[in-house]
Image 1 (cartoon, rainbow, N blue to C red):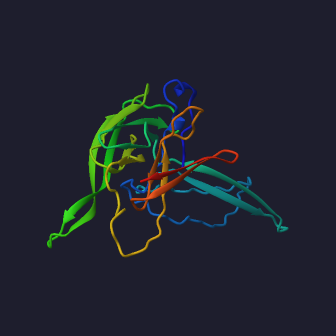
Image 2: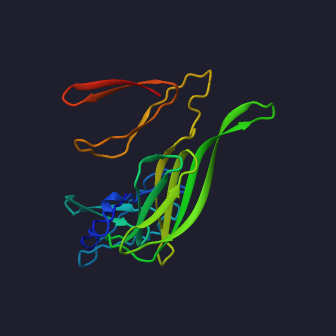
Image 3: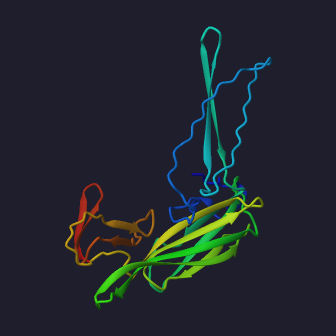
Length: 271
């Protein structure tokens, strides 16, 4: 992955470290795990002691992400003594990088999420007036009835598209009203003058809807985990912390402990 550096000229406009420039598996582009490629070859130096080779790199249009290329060279003389050196460099997928952030980590139905986006160069300069294509993917559960009149839950998803313009003076705001509970993923794509793409994404959980088969009666015993999501990374004395608990079943009883150089307080709660 690659994160554009924090440019001194942009520090008063945006904090570039708050933005995510990578994408998840949702990124609409076939991001499969690919094995590393290795090329071995031999060459001889010319009369000046130089040896050159050319790497024709066409990139990978299906995975717009930076790729690090490493080269190792071993030189052996007539006495079979060897010297080795190496170098590496990054091949950027595009002249542009796009970043995304959100004012919340989770929210409830009827809340408004405010996403922010910036478009930068590989050096971290904010780029003005670049068209950004956006996708909003919602994943949620709906109750359905089969031909026998039996009720069941089924997972559905929807995808809405939108477009915004980047700014060199501030981040571009993307407000989204949460009309149903579930997982919301925003994917942003951008392309440079040579039609080379880059993208980023961010997912937010919206409370108030069923997002899996949690709590549905079943005869199978499955091992599942509990997911905890805090509303911030750091807190100060006196702050109020809000933690979202996503349990694999309900109703349930939880046990909470406050630990700091030992157990300070213990609480029991119901879900």
